[in-house]
Image (tube, rainbow, N blue to C red; front, side):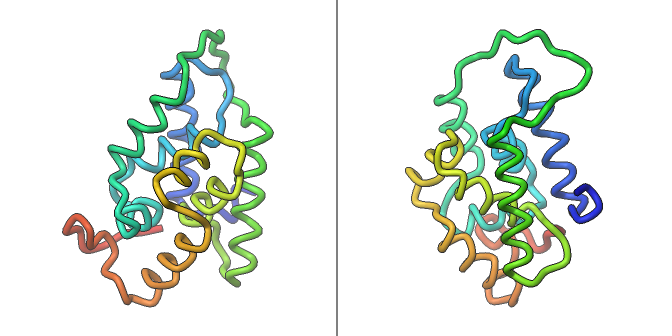
Length: 159
């Protein structure tokens, strides 16, 4: 699995572990993945969110409002929840359907929004993001129709 993930996608999963631990959880869910991606300034997922008119900071606040503080004993290794594994599986499916070789943060974002029962998906949907809009943003960004990071003046993003 790891071999097909971009560096940014791998970093998002690593940062999701940090987010989960900081919140008192010993497992990583879709909400932790979204929190991790939203805090990264230089990734495709953030450019997509900004292209949809969503502020990553506001998105983080909305997700945090939906989460309670965990009280789990933190171990050495964070495990992915079934939902987080499903998000990653959906990301791989999206990548294949888009005929791309690497799974990036953009695919993880679609995976999150498609995991309709997760807190992360619900927050994204409440804010107006859905898989069709995200796919449109991905196509536009990759075609160069929208400057990556154009919503905040940044000029380049690596996936």
